[in-house]
Length: 130
Image (cartoon, rainbow, N blue to C red; front, side, top):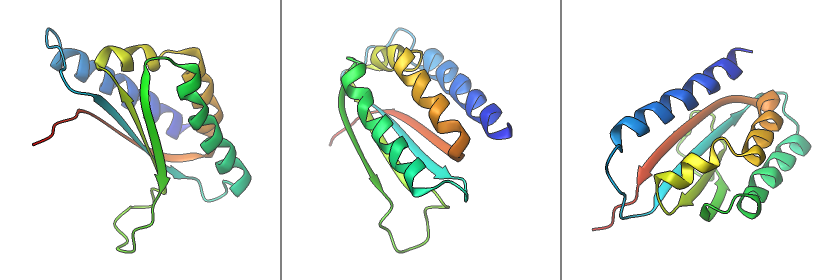
């Protein structure tokens, strides 16, 4: 239950901060939504595989997603703090994320995810290239 509350607060705070920060500003570069998962110790390989498949299905269901990639930690420096999965969802702009977050397909995925999730880290940014 604590994890659900933390996830809900994180998503609400994230949406609020980005709404205030980007008000009146049009992004000219892709908007990236980075999500990292740390699963509960009792999450099975089958449950995690189902979640990977569920997340990977979202680009076909939500048309504001312009690119999607994901992977599991392969680092050997023990800096991942238990996070094993990273998903990068790209939108044309912040408005794409605003469609994605409340979308029924995303909400259904989150409901499937929560019982197996220990921690989540969400980081949104406008891509910059030098």
